[in-house]
Length: 282
Image: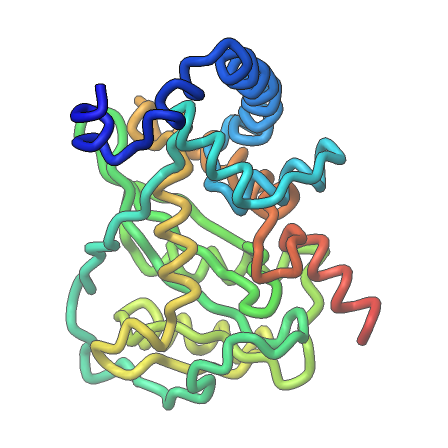
């Protein structure tokens, strides 16, 4: 026994103590408590049918269930019971075509000043592709408030035409909760949709300034790319068999994201809560 304890790196007293009746009862009690905590954590993990990581679980527990656990405890329980959160994957989106001579690139006015704590001041827009069903392909265009992370407008289509970008702008115009701040700008990459005269005319008509990332620099629109990454992890896209099913799934997610998805960098609030918070202190 001494040889085995030495090989395992434990003391004889520690070995016997581990298998003592007192220690076994203590482990049983701990397991029973952990089982109860696990059930509560799973409620937050599956809240609104969207799987979450430890920090999201912590915020959802506090915001929706009035339960406060520290991150260390949540992570321990998740590890113990194999509760695995989605892992973000790289976004392989590629720009679809080069701009023609009539298209105009505008300067990078934003210069990565994403968080200005003014709702409606800095808007980010981009387009990503979505594979669903049996190899079907669709496209999602969004406009995101950079200060609050709220998705203000979006458009889903099975074609990547100019209407995809301009219709997203028109939906922004119809959004009754959107209040355009003074000197508001909309920022994008140098994709053909955003350099197109039709898009730029509509931007001016809405009273917005326009800013563009430097060519080939994904960091200049990083928060928008980040949203697409989380979106693809959390939305059950592949299960959709038709475009209408996909649109319904996306609509439900946008409601969840804006109103129920707590975010660590928003003082643990949802985008809508944080928008209202900033407007109150303005």
